[in-house]
Image (cartoon, rainbow, N blue to C red; front, side, top):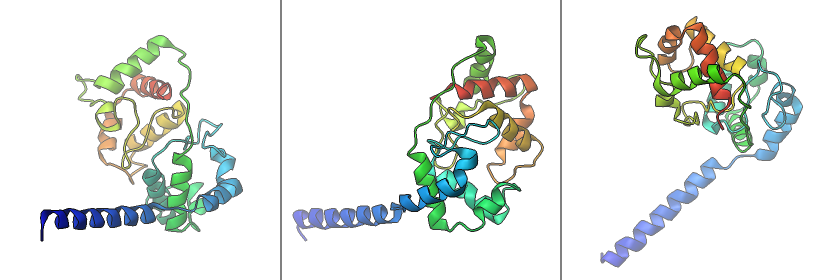
Length: 204
């Protein structure tokens, strides 16, 4: 086969793969909005903004991460008396759709308050604490806290929710995610936990 033939064949295969990926990623956003307006909005808001600090802001969160957490709630791998009944009837397709729905929403940073506390949080987030062996948060979640499809976006999250999750990791009450978080949470002092949570809320 001539080189031109190989190029045409390669282009055809690439196009077919792209179409397959697009088809696999296609989700029913109308169904997602229906579910959100029927139940999710009560705690997380229609835009994923979550007015209450005890519930996570879902706006801008990675779709894959949201779908995984919903699956873990459904299976019981992540323990929650509140979320398990909400996730039990969801299909995998609906979980993916909900993830895509909330990822498309905009999340805003929280205004800075205590500048001295934020300075501590910024230091811990970006540099960790070499004296206690604490790694930086940015080493996994990124310099702006945007995370990855496997690691959650932290930027703009409610400080109270961040603190609650760190405490759950420390007590081994949350075990469905990266086990590294158990060690990290155990190395954070109360001040560091509070400070880094406040700093994360200011990221956008």
